[in-house]
Length: 324
Ligand code: AVJ
Image 1 (tube, rainbow, N blue to C red):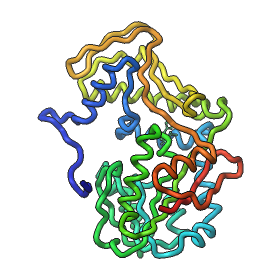
Image 2 (tube, helix red, strand yellow):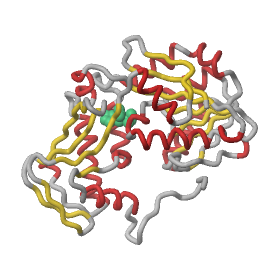
Image 3 (spheres, helix red, strand yellow):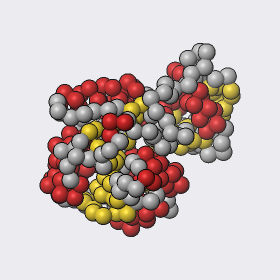
């Protein structure tokens, strides 16, 4: 079933987000403890991620912005004017305007599960582009989303920057790419395009530094998850006994973030007891990195044919235009 403007956060009588509690309790019960990366982004986490994008070591945002700045004429030629741009996520105040200015879209439709962020960024964007029709939709874009009637007759361009696709293991990424096809009307005779950012495999030292910066901002971002669990799920995790770790997993071509216990600890979350031995970890994020071929293979598996590919001047990050 398609989702559309419903209130999406399901809270119990105490105001606890049921999905968050379910994911945390299930994840902490596994042999390798793990919490899905999406829970890193409460208000504090979203602010810390913004701070990460300014770090010297964190190259992806700058590299992708360089491509968006430099290739506007090519986007315009390949994409054409008048398409409805459907952004998967609320949009960044820097990247989205660069694309919109380049291609002269017919409408802009940001999709996000968080209505607050969505309305804020949609309002800011409307101010920047007074003539542009903006139709925010509060929805979980991991499933097919019903787009507003106003864009029914328009050709579509999906926009998914940031290499957010890299947070997913392949089967989830393929599910998302297929949902995007459906959302953008590919099953109804339309030929939507997708502009997607995918970060590239590079030296381990560069990658590990990008996810373990000298100022410790990424460490704070990771530790904020434990603080959030304590705050929202009545947890007693001793945060001072956890340490941030970012490590390149060469077998699976991904950076992994973990919270490592520095001593044996025991704690409770929502009334359930957990224990960790010194050295044991909670796996909090995967950030997959791609080669030209692995990126193409993933897109093809999700029903998208790559048509054009751009990289930044240092070859660190790719932006790919694909067709359904
Ligand atoms: C927002 C998911 C693209 O994986 O690079 C940054 C998140 N995590 N530093 C990434 C992140 C640690 C980021 N994404």
